[in-house]
Structures are given as structure tokens and as C-alpha cells.
Figure 1 (cartoon, rainbow, N blue to C red):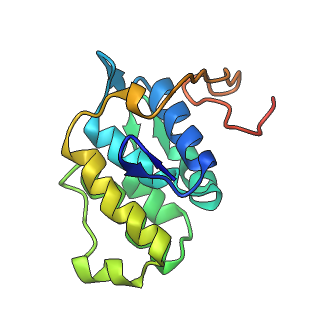
Figure 2 (cartoon, rainbow, N blue to C red):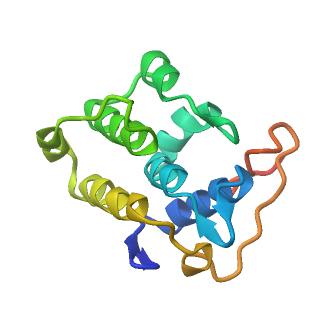
Figure 3 (cartoon, one colour):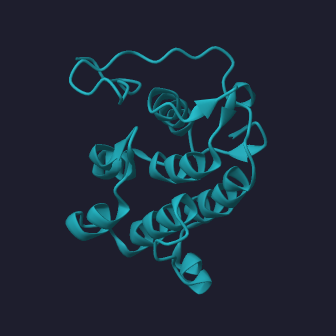
Length: 150
């Protein structure tokens, strides 16, 4: 699916992206912070990637070094997480460009579109028609994701 000119793997990918971006305060003057936007876009691409990375995301940053050390990722996911980390902070190690070729078609599209998300401050409204995140009592900075109830 395409929303705001950006490819999303699924409606859940879009909803997770919007929920997290909004709830970690990565929107200012209606525009998405490009560093957070690119990283969160990648980390919300599918349920497995999100579930493995969500405790490392907060309003205070994304702990990529810990995420890569502590979580067991497939080779493809490791490439995506490294790319997310580098787009978030250029001091983080980036994957070699040829590493992107191990990704399946959808994840390759995610990697390419993350560069577009990082390129400038996109309007939040280009991605969201009407969106309202549910409050997560246990982690108020992290929204309840679609399908979760607590």
C-alpha cells in the first residue's frame, strides 16, 4: 500500500508507524522528525521486527547498539536494523549497500523508502486521515498497537 508517497507493507505497518511516531513526540509543527521517522518506519515494517525492537524505542532515543547486541535477528532483519540505526544517527554502523540485496522484495522496498522518509520532514497528515492512539498504561510513551488491549 502507498500512503503519502511511501510504501507500507500493510495497514498494520502504517498504523504502528503512526502510533509510535505520535506517542514518542516525533512530530513537531505537524511534521515528522526525519531521523525518528526513518528508523521507526523500518522497525514497524512487520510484527516480528516490531516485537523484537519495541522495548528499545522511547522518547529519549532508540538504543540500537543494545538492540543489535541483545536481540537475535535473521540476517535480513539485521541489515534493516543497521540501516535504521544509521539513518537515525550516522555514527551508527551502516550495512554495506550490497547487503541490501539479501532482502526480499518487500523489505528491499522498505529499505529504499526509509531513505525517502529520512530525506525531509514529511507532514504527519499525509499519512494519517484520522488517527488516534490508545494509551498504554504500562508504557505511556509507547502506544497500544492495533489489536492490543491492556
